[in-house]
Length: 476
Image (cartoon, rainbow, N blue to C red; front, side, top):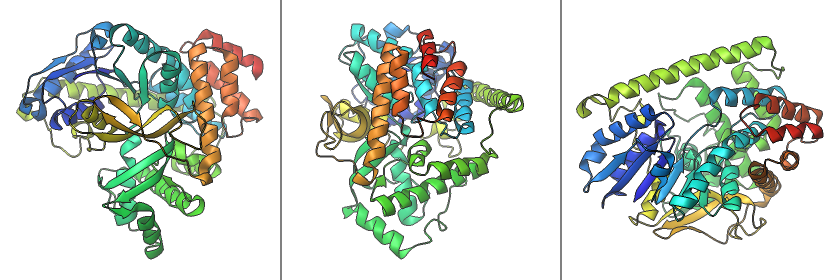
């Protein structure tokens, strides 16, 4: 197995690498390749992986490489993953705040700001895919860069590379369902589920927990323990703001299940908030002190100051990571529960499960974004959706016989259409395609505020997206 990680300096990849080694993905040897534009970051990652307990205990030699060109990193790879935030954190934070200020969701995925993030990331993904067509045409590409559904659809529709959008939220149900059913703030791998929907807003269409029907268990819990949310015990490592968002998400999960008969797979904020849009805007304002005002000069300065603080924190985290990378292996805090980047990821992690399947360790099941081939029977073929696949040495195989719950069908279909059209715009750089994709977004796309927001996002993205998109202004 040759596994190449683009954006190889991302700290989260340490946990992924340790987990893959622990689970036996490289029991017969292979290569771990880390590619990053900042080679100091990929070097630090490579050094940390070599010092990890899992690497040192591996049964066969594994080559760890980092000082590579993109073509060298991809040449002969079996699996490629991409982890990045196109345009940087400030551009994303500004776009999100613009979204909130105009009364729309602000996020890096299913939202207007997420749409412009797709335009920034598209050239990077296409460059990776085109290079793969030359040097590793049979490799599988896992896109972790948001919005994953859009960018994976673009690659699948316009190149010969098999691409799947993957999301860290894949594990969320292992936490959320446990919180709901037991009140414990821990991950459990006890849930056997099949999934259909769109990334960040997918739904469990079939499920069990240790052999018992999952839907029956939840109905019984909500009936027997109406104060279940008040009984929830949070981990001491969870911040106050995160606790508020978690409670909001869990409450929304229960409401969607009770009112619409739909059990959300992953309580990502910009997914469930589409069903509670006005409430979400009010909640966001109460948490962050934001009452929907437009960004004035003072607000912009505050945003820039916050970004400066975040950037310094990131630089400090990189500095500390570099110090660990240069330290003796037995002085590195491998098992410190407060240091999330060191955690061996839960076995439900989508990247690790994909590696387990493709390497032949065991057949696995994952939910990934891909073009619907008819497996989601009540959704049009060709739409980009998130749905369950089985994974083995021969690749990822869609599981058929799935249907999106009717109570959430309309929103799901609209979001899928929006993201599929956006994939086309990313590939063509045609402003008319972008306009049609934005119009397909199901939240007030015909409003004056929407068009004003599109113009602001266009200005904020200038220099980071194709110049041809300036033609969008003709439609505003």
